[in-house]
Amino acid sequence: MNRIVYLNGAWLPENEAKVSIFDRGYVFGDAIYEVTAVVGGKLVDYAGHTARLHRSIGEVGIVCPLSPDELLAVHREIVTRNNLDEGLIYLQISRGAADRDFHFPKNPVPTLSMFTQAKKVLENPLYDTGISIITVPDIRWGRRDIKTVQLLAPSMAKMEAEKQGADDAWLYEDGFITEATSSSAHIINAQGHLITRQLSTRILHGITRLSILDIARHAGITVEERPFTVEEAKAAKEAFVTSATQFAIPVVRIDGQPVGDGKPGPVAKKLHQLYLEHHINNAI
Ligand code: PDD
Image 1 (cartoon, helix red, strand yellow):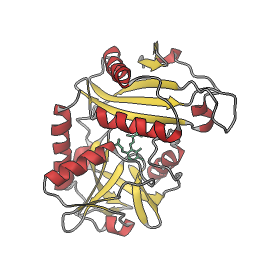
Image 2: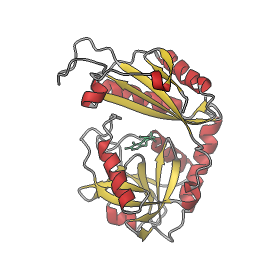
Image 3: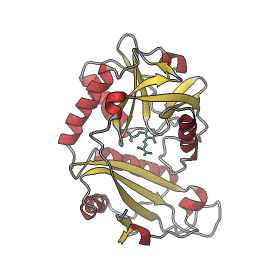
């Protein structure tokens, strides 16, 4: 790979970008990240992702070193410098380097890095096949609404899914699904209602989720934002996940049991299509 990455104001070949071993992102997981999709060289739902970035850093008291205009300019420049037509932009912002101490440093200098991943996001075969998931306990911390880089728990859940021959995992707590390892979880029940967990500190406030719910309501689908059980998910007509990296993907098996007829459902497909129509047209 020969990407150009962004690090604290500099544009560097990826193997020349270095961060201190004292960086609090590395030592304490004291960092926030954000992911934005790029289609046709344009940013998809950028406003939503930057709004959540600012909310996340605000919750932990990290100050963004760039103004909103500068941040947008850097997103655009990383696309141009990498000739990125389709893929993803990952942004990490940590509290910066300081001698090891649980207390936050008095005058932190944040570390801001960005890199791209070229990837076909529009032509993902999973849109047609769907994915299989297992359910595992949600062992993450209590502020899942903050998009921190503390991603070991979801990584472990994904490894467990792989071990069991599944594509991904949904997480549950007290019998209720919270979300997927790296996406929001939704089901369609027998009445055709879209059921998804309500926003709280228990889940990440998915930007794609927000938009899909809006699109669903406009399409006349009743949306119920409430917790749903693992059993309810298994008895659902359809299930699907949403995220910036894969938009809406049908879930066709849960813990080895087929969801509905075991094929991608029409509602998930329709929402995916409507999401693309809206967001590709409005990409900036
Ligand atoms: N993950 N829930 C979790 C735990 C997530 O990590 C993500 C996104 C989502 C969906 O959020 P959004 O629609 O804003 O992408 C929900 C990103 C894609 C990742 O970690 O790569």
